[in-house]
Image 1: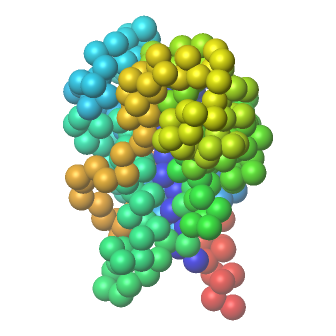
Image 2: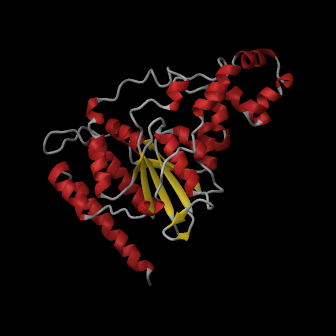
Length: 313
């Protein structure tokens, strides 16, 4: 069974940076976010048992969303230097573990992840090695609720999201998404078109809150459907919708994950990861100073080999 895990590098490292107390390398450089990223990866390998792994990162260049709305995410404070300095170390670890990393200028990691998911679950475009094959299950590891729009039970796409700290996480299918967001994955973009997203600094239709939005979507299914039936809506809600049409359209655009990023993907490489190889052990010992994690990756590597041997009999 081919099971792909895609890790949202920025989201997990940001969460780890704030959840894990300060850690430094033998040279005194901060490394707690890298420690958290690796810890999450080990947890995922142990629980989900992926055959394929990939990581996506954001880029520094402006994205198409910022070009559409210059104030998009503008309220967010700059990334702390102590966190920013750790991304190079994360890249060193991922290279040592032979885990491919993907990013694309002009796009967020969300879009790169959406594209990987789309291609991984499209049997007409995906090949592994020399023969056609299918990724049977995709698990996205992130702390970003926006990516719940990618969850799809029929295509076996799930979201693995921390609910407290960095390692207490929950696996989200469609029913879990409804419980968390109030609507199924397919309606999350429509919900955000109406209510906006303060964390990303866009505001949907002013005056339309989650409950009203959920009620409208329950009846009319989509934002387009709502505006096609404006003659059935009256009072203050109708007035707000009429006045907020332009903002709703823009918010829909901003909330939608692009699943067609022009990026080259290599699914065969995603299956060649080695979490406990000598390159990783050397990096941990000579540069990172990870003693406990060294033991853990060796234990995980041993367990993987035992499972492989067990599957032969």
